[in-house]
Amino acid sequence: MAAERLSSVRSRELLAACCVELLKASLVGSAPAASGGGGSSESPEALLDALHASLQSSLQDAAHAIAPEHQEAWAESQWEAFQEAQVAVQQLLVTLHDKAAEAGSKTGALQVARCREFGLLVPQDHSAAFAAYATAAAMGSAEGALRCGIHFFEGTAPGGRDGGRAYDFLSQALEAADAALKHAAADGSSSAPLPPLAPPCPETAVEGDVPPPLTPAEVRYSALTWIGRCYLEGAGVERSVTKAADCFQRAGNQAELQELAMLQRMFAEAQLPAAEAQG
Image 1 (spheres, rainbow, N blue to C red):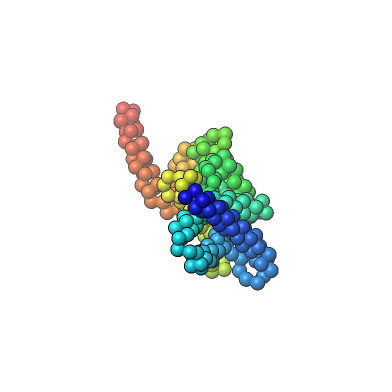
Image 2 (image 1 turned 60 degrees about the vertical axis):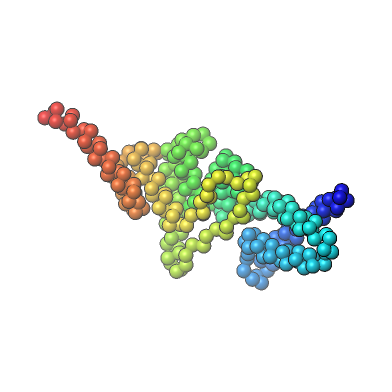
């Protein structure tokens, strides 16, 4: 029994090592092929999906050559190997996004930020997430600027709340989103979404759903809404209910407009007794 278990463990180790090396070879080897102009560039996630299917097919072929008395041990090894390989692959994906960010990719920087903020592939790290969002914003990412602005408005950025920086980042996000929408309208294309991230493993997953990356239209909606809130609270700008309402109107945010109207009615009713007393 001990010998069988030892054999199973060794099979698992070898299989995990093979999976990781094959994945690395596929991902690293795809860079020269993509740069050679022979075809369209694939995202790391697309390459992983294709390689996973290839590995599954190869493993099924190998299973037919295994003696019946070893089938159970093989099945156990195969499952555990993929569990172990997944951790290495997740780290590899984050490294790829990091390298892309270092090379000047705002998409890579945004992916790193999302990984850090939501605990995708790596443990949560809000400080590192904010730094990555700031990097993405500096590269022209509309969502990166939006996230920085929201963090400064809500006081979750390093150093706490800063209305001025919140307004600046949100204005930057709005400008970038408008530019992206105009560019898409000019060439008749729609904004391509970011490639989906791999699902997090239980050890690094966070509770609840992870929001998907935002489109330029969604960034514009959010940026105008948060800029309107800046005007309502006088965060970084002179307080102006009129300008806040204009932002909500431009965003098409009916919920904020209705709430603002309700607050204005409440304020007017609260001032009414004092006005009567003066009369």
